[in-house]
Image (cartoon, rainbow, N blue to C red):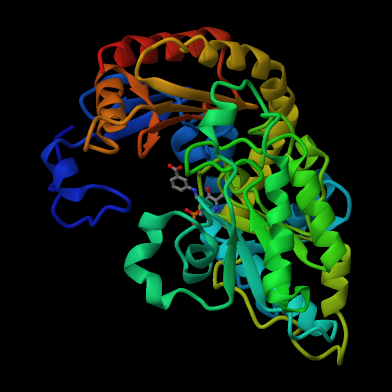
Length: 436
Ligand code: PXG
């Protein structure tokens, strides 16, 4: 295959000039592997961008999409419907814990976040509590790049250019990352659950009557895999309950088996009021996101005249037939192949494998949960991000796809990964990191 012209595509979250001078192009994929344009096999250590949980180019998903495209290519879901969207919502409601029974479809994680934030504010208003409009995020949180998600998000580089245009009425909890206390802890660290109590400080400052919701990633992904301290999410839940604040789990990454359970809410045994999802919902094949709301939230909207639209919100492609078909086929694979249980069974092996990298001088922390891992590197002096970027380039050139953010390497293989491929990934990384 010949290289296309690279000029016109303004690439997202990419150093465009650097990339276009030294491109890395993926041409096809199967199972655990990508194939590069120059014909090399590349082991996928990141499930694409945390989304291809069942592995690449699964035949049944491909067929479901093809069949749906030829049957009902598009149909609206505003004042209209098509069966597969209802069937999918029903299936998801059964997969979700507790009474997370109402499913609002979107097309991405960012749209799911905006939708959940709007539902939270509108929910309080529907109950006559219209002063609850404030939103609380967390430092280092990533919730997509819409104005809502960016505002509750806590990654400085994503915000600074737009600082004066962020939505008002937002505050942030502190993040839980602390190398001095928790470096090289396998699984959840012991130290740090008290950081949830910072919510009390925000309540004292703003008054609970102004706060609609707290949004957090149960395990922060994009910012470099930050594992919640033991008891932290439980404490956050209790504080939200005490102050009548809704708790939103952003499970765009943790949803659909990443921790060895359907959702992180299952893993931690903590029930949020709303969950945002995307990515693994369709195995990354067709863009789709969703917000899952507990029954009482949906019910709060179902009042007033029956002819009135209850929530003035939605997308042209909410519940798109192709995305629904892809999601149905994806959920079928997860269930038939027991992939969430598979991830759970592999998690101890994964933990041991990634922690075996401890001792390489450039590594200052290793953390893991389920089939996620973060490997933090000591930055080169005055060149933040360059050590990890070099690791990305060297890995790619020698056949392994990793993800980096700053000087942190993130790993999140498809849930079909074999133990031998885990060994391969870790050995590969060991060889590269020893040279950096
Ligand atoms: N919430 C969370 C928790 C996410 O991880 C989004 C929302 C936004 O999703 P969309 O579909 O709008 O991109 C995300 C996205 C990375 C990486 O390398 C992570 C994401 C996206 C791209 C790269 O860590 N997460």
